[in-house]
Length: 304
Image 1 (spheres, rainbow, N blue to C red):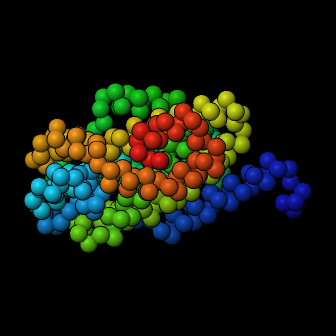
Image 2: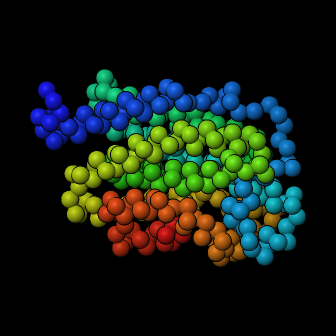
Image 3: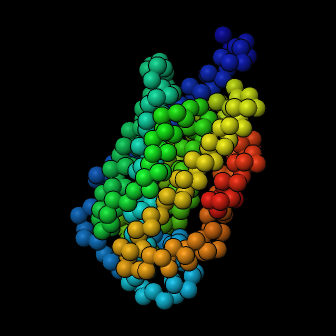
């Protein structure tokens, strides 16, 4: 039977299977083993930053100008470790949502197998981030207790486009900053390797999340679209505002209260976040997920 004689839903299903097969093929050709690809054995060289200094929450502030070069490097190492820890937290939420979504699906389907492949990638990424944060000399940074509990509710209740679009928001924000870090020779080499692995493998995950979001929205009425647009925006707000833990400043030897005050007013960092999310906001707009209430939370998170 030719594709032209298939019903629209059958054509959509064939297209989904084709996308999943291509993602599986890409994963087979281009995946990494962080256990062997990352240099875990060489001691940490403190002459390097942990992230591009321009991505520091204090870069461009009066406080940044007062810091010694050693203090700036320690701060970026702590901030990079905090971003990694937040990534682990959300990747654990992601894995549970994807598992719940495919629980009763046909395991012989390519999209089922791709979902399991994505979960396997996320498991390896979480271990990689954990080892990387430890090597940077950082503690286990975690979101605030209220945010952890909100995440627990979200991973249990979110479904369809709310789950997949929230995954996309988290991965898109990480992707842009890590593309800068992996090319920056001021960043410690093992962190650059970690970022390169994550960027390459997450490009497949973002393709999957975009396709799933569009697919789920085809069945969404106006009320569901409005509700999930707000849920996605609230989840995005808490993900983004949890990336840099307030503890990084004390662990870098800084005055926490002054650092928090200057970071909150740092227009350079706000501008960087907004510019990094331009493509993401364009996608959400095309999916009609940038409603008035949703925009309130994106603006509060400095994503638009």
